[in-house]
Length: 241
Image 1 (cartoon, one colour):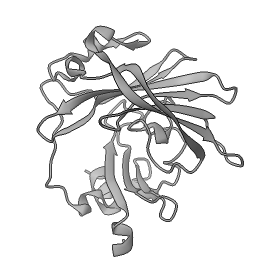
Image 2 (image 1 turned 120 degrees about the horizontal axis):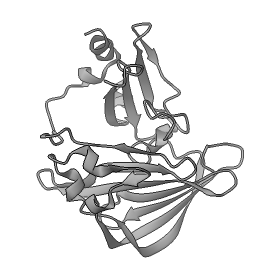
Image 3 (image 1 turned 135 degrees about the horizontal axis):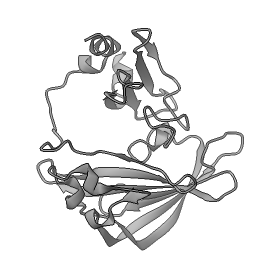
Image 4 (image 1 turned 90 degrees about the horizontal axis):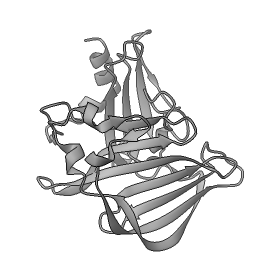
């Protein structure tokens, strides 16, 4: 990595899959860039069958997300990520909307996931919705390009700029998937961030939820990670343990 490209790094990400057995051992590193036009994101995946690390240019846009069973695209991780280049973006305006907010029940480390997971959706008794001012932003696929979602409508919290709700439309312009982020205030940082997020598929009735805390544990915000922990060599070492 050159000093110039290092300055363009927005975040570094690691994902390791521990189950089910058919997916266990899959590992992913991503170097997310700020300006993805001049310097696209870089991704590597550890192939457990070959026991090798390979570049993964497919970890982008509307390719299926890692270990998501096809229930989200790569650019739906963290509600939206990556290059915005396939869409034309427009600001619709500001409005009041009932949105997920202060979802501390869902965050509680002692909550058994069985209390949250229900058929078709998360348990609404464990969630919280409040009326907030949000900015509505419309994204429509550009002419000459393509995406699984022809159109997306984003609702950003006016106070934090967190995307709280996103509606995704298919090529027939019918609403297909709805994404919700369930935020709390992390007072020790301090920051507002989602404790969970869900992608609901209105066609097949399934949903994918990301962010469950293991019983008795909460997120750990650490500062002792090194750049070498997010290198392809590190990915290989993790895969061979």
